[in-house]
Length: 405
Ligand code: ADP
Ligand code: MG
Ligand code: MG
Ligand code: MG
Image 1 (spheres, helix red, strand yellow):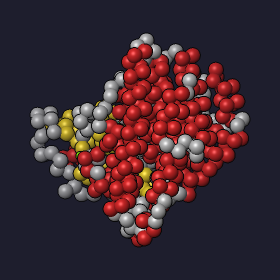
Image 2 (cartoon, protein in one colour; image 1 turned 45 degrees about the vertical axis):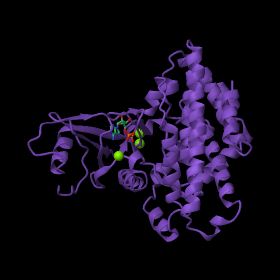
Image 3 (cartoon, rainbow, N blue to C red; image 1 turned 60 degrees about the horizontal axis):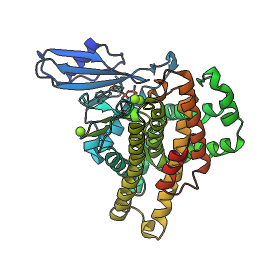
Image 4 (cartoon, rainbow, N blue to C red; image 1 turned 45 degrees about the horizontal axis):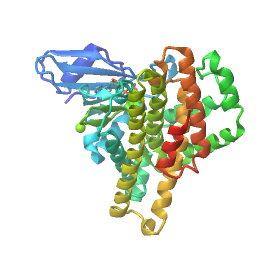
């Protein structure tokens, strides 16, 4: 095994290749290719491959700053430890939905894992109009098992306290607190708003005190509800898919937060793709209707699988004497659902006016068409936030989306 590195150094393709040999992932005289393939906002991702037999690994390394902004935005390397620990914990619960970690090193801030290059990032697949038959079931299972077994409902309650202390992630939580819950709701300089959209945002979002009150409550939930270990960044760019497989990556934002947070993130990003398809598939109305129907079915089925599986786990693995009290499960699920819808609304809004957009919408080149999608998203996001307590079933949620002009 390699000698543990004592100082942090950003890897290059050469040193990444060397590291993979030191870790005995390959033989000393194997001929290896190394490429940096990261397209995310924060980290380096190297793919190391044996050029003869094509065996490969991924080495992900955190930089001491946010790659998307540069060295002016320092960011803790500890997120790499969090990511490695979260992936390992998740692998215990849902190995078929998680990359295997072969090595992690908190000094070098690296995680070595399965190469998933045979799969496609879900966001890209959806933009291309592809359907994934296993997606909803897999994500429903992923959410039920990870959220249940890391919570006081499914994990020994003393062990849960110890585990939660390993996932204190203040700097990455602050990114979410600022960029998802705060800045988009004020005229803040991190926002990124086309001039032609500014008046609409001012009137629809910033000048609405009732909306802000609801967002304040959701932010409070994010700050204080340490219910379970959430992934923390479960958008469609954190999911690799094919017709046969679904694998969730990139849990560097993991922390003990509300049950509804990951559910909401996933739903929000499906909704954003849905709204963007109004433009992408405008000239193929039949295909558009069919694909948007598919997206709503994914939302519905994901929640139904989650609900069913969570119920089964609740009945079979109770950690608390109250869990067989009538109504407790139903109330827990209802709160998870309304929190999820509220978080989804915040995530939809922040992607339209905050620092980081989504390719689904930003790839619309015509500014008027793009703005129209953004306006739709902003008003829908608002509805989700303020109506979340009345949207008491998945059917009602889906109807709000499909009725939204
Ligand atoms: P970031 O935290 O910077 O967003 P990600 O973990 O999302 O980094 O990875 C960024 C990109 O690198 C992904 O979109 C994907 O293209 C590639 N990538 C990441 N992990 C893997 C993997 N295990 N296998 C193949 N490609 C990967
Ligand atoms: Mg990512
Ligand atoms: Mg696996
Ligand atoms: Mg990330």
